[in-house]
Image 1 (cartoon, rainbow, N blue to C red):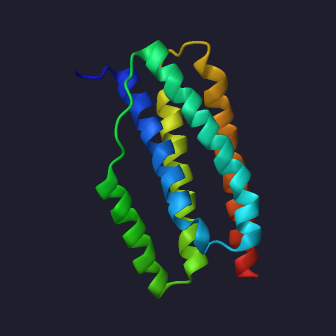
Image 2: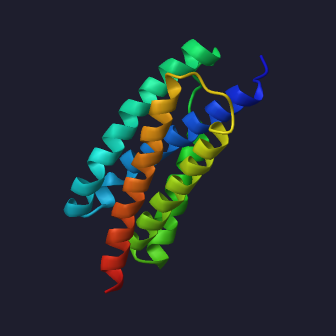
Length: 147
């Protein structure tokens, strides 16, 4: 079955959200306690909104869930760990998390160019605000390290 443009955009967004959550979960132990406490609420909210968006995508867009790309997840984790040997571990992790946010916001922007069912709009807006809040937290810790 081929996806139409709107389904493909939603599929890309759901994949970006899942990748972000997987990456965070795989690397949460590498974070300092205070940073983990600041980011955990952001990622828990994202997890809930992603589940809701998956349900809505199935109901309104006839989009069936896909399996995660395990090889890609393994590659991202390995690449991040290798960079940590060369550069400060926390610096690498913050930059990788910021890149995940950029990818999600790009996917959200793409999705927002399509006609959306009314029920999906509030979830998309919450996800946008969630990304902005996560970016603010990450920048706060990134600037603390520079001082």
